[in-house]
Amino acid sequence: MRAMHRDNIYFFHPTRDIGGAPYLLARIARYLIEHTSHRVYLIDYQDGFIRRRLEGLDYQFVEFKQGSRVAIEEPATIVQFLSHVPFINSRLILAETTKLFFWDMHPYNLVEQMAFSGVYKRMPAENAHRLSSLIEQTRCRKLARFVELGAASRGVVFMAERNKDYNQKLLGFSGQVGYLPIPIETSALAKSGGCLKNADVDQTIHIGWLSRLDTWKTRVLFRLLDDVDAYRRMHGSGSLHVHIIGDGPKQNEVQARCTGVNTSVVGRLEDSALSEYMLDHLHVGFAM
Image 1 (cartoon, rainbow, N blue to C red):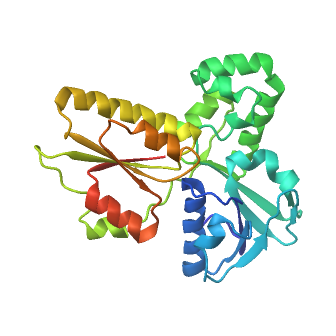
Image 2 (image 1 turned 90 degrees about the vertical axis):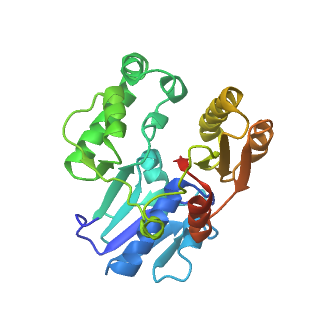
C-alpha cells in the first residue's frame, strides 16, 4: 500500500456474505484507518459484511445499491479484487483522476470472466489456453492485454507466484508482474508460542477446516472427509477428528455428509472466538 501516493482510498467489494476476501479487505481498511493518515472510504451495502466489521471506526461510508452506479468525483485509488474487472463500468462512475488497483486473490479470478470457465477449470492451464485460443480468442487477448497494461502501471498485482503462473499459462500474457501477499495478524499465535495445539503421538489429531460452505469449497472439504474416513478405517476410529468452521448455503449438506466421520460442525466463528477455538482445539488447519 505504501506505493499508492493518494490520500483517498476506496474499498470496493459489496457483499453481505462472510468470506476470506471481504474479511481481508476489512482487516486492511481497519489498519489504514487506525494507523495511517489516509482517508478511507468503503463502498458497500447498508448491511454489508465489511461495513459491519468497521463499525465504530472513523471512515466514510458510501452506500451501494444493486443496479445503481456510484460516482467517484475526486482523486482516489479504488482497491478491489481482480474478479471485479467486468463490473467496474456498470457499478462505478470514475473520474479521470481515479486509479484502479486490482488484487488477484484466487487463480480463477480471471478465468471466471471467460465464457467456458467451467470447462477450463477442469483441465491443466496449458490445455485450457489451447482450447480458449480457438473458441474465444478475442476474450483471451483482451484479458492478457489488461494484465500486461495493469502490471506495467502497478495497478494489477498477484497474491502469489502460483496464481500468476496459472493465469500466464491460461492467457499467455508477458512482462513482469508485482506481488502483494496476504498480510497475517500474528498476535494470537505469538501468545501461544507460534503454534496450535501440541500433538502427542498416541492422541487424536484434530484437523480444522475454515471456509464459507459454498459449492466450490465444499467439494474440496468432501475430499478431505473421504481421506479422513479412509484413514479411520486403516488406523482406528479415534485417530483423526475434523472441526468444520464456517457457514453458508451448503451447511445442511455438509452436516449430512459428516455422518460416520469423526467431526464437529462448529458453525461461524469470528475474531477472538475463532482464534481461541483454533488454538485450543486444533493441531493443523486448512482454510479456503
